[in-house]
Image 1: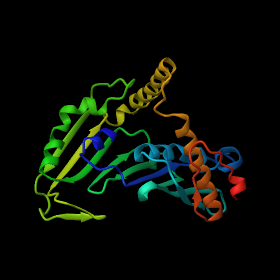
Image 2: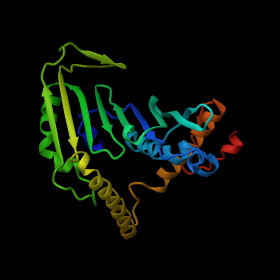
Image 3: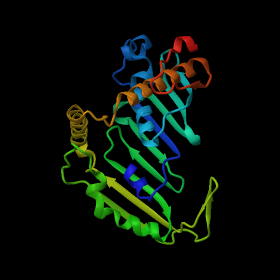
Image 4: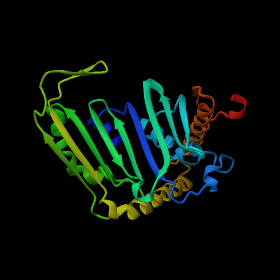
Length: 272
């Protein structure tokens, strides 16, 4: 996504959305997951990964959070949502529910770029779809993208299996050639682009997962050798936990909570 934004094909995301309808099929009434004293609650045990993803994709540290927790009738909290504000009015919305059978699980990540949208489905994503409106110059740039698919999908330490591909379809003059305006920005965008970034489909999930772990380890080896900063550093991890703690407190109190700046100490008990 950083590469596509850097090439000017889409704008930086102005909104992040993640919906996770997860399974509770193996989470009986006495399971440790439901006990916040053991798990930390859904935001801490589970949401941290996606607070981290939002920070990485939006490229900014979160400012504040509002949150809601829903308790199942006669039982524990099994659904939570959080709206996390980032600088510049960028909003990240998160929902996690543990209410489904295994076969009914589903996850959706959506990035709003204004004149474009990215959708990524699945717990271990293997496919992304981008829908964009653009001008003639942009359409030509999109059409050149598949030829650079290998470079676009390259991640250091990740060994491709050879079935990855990027496809682009441009529907010229799919819309009016009159100027289009949104959030104060006016553009002439008559052409509609559909792009697919495919890592090989569902059968390739084990490969994608294992190679992602390999890439993370390779990055740590690089850091050990040259003393540089890892792609996923300690600040990223601490920030994700800080958002999770703030979201938990926001849901408990019904009030918006600030997210401490990276490197500061967070004391939710004192804030309460």
